[in-house]
Image (cartoon, rainbow, N blue to C red):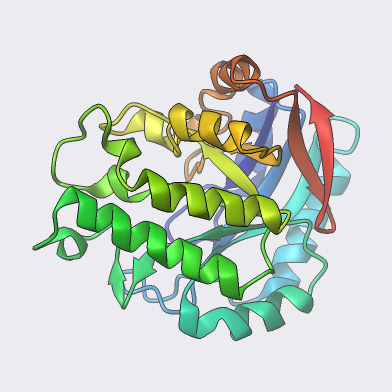
Length: 267
């Protein structure tokens, strides 16, 4: 079973790909199920002035059209990728509770008003300090917020770190990563395997397969795969290869979601 649960359409300010293009690309890639997970970052400090969906009613109505159009060919879920920020958690809770979402990705894109994708986030910090700050921010949000299903691109900071990626970087702060994974498992939450990392300097998914192995050894089972595609050509990117590795790591199921309920499917 090949699924892509991280897709950005024209409803994300950093994508110009329409939903028709994404659905066609999904079929061409042999996918059976997808989730649109457009951005909802309420205070993203970047050149994108509006990094969130303004009209969720229109978002749901548009996806409903494609659910009907592709019925019997492709299962389409309504999702959202929220930018976890401590001071915005109550606002996210209200938004999520107000609509019948199938699936929510919780991601950290900025910390203390600085985007992780910007050089300023890394200035004056060692690699260890970068990972400590990033993982600590995720852990803090997990402990305060329950309205998400998986954590997105867990070691996302390695994608933008100007210091060259080196073998073993993903094992920095392993104690902190272990705390984070144990917290997810205890709260019934999961991890996203984000294949966009294969397109960047680390040439590895987010998080690294070693972290996924550790998650499995700790008892983690809830896992989704997502391309983080903002362009049609990346829909389903490296899904077959990633799914095969997940089997090798001992995962027996992949998680799908409907109305925020998990439905494991055999790999």
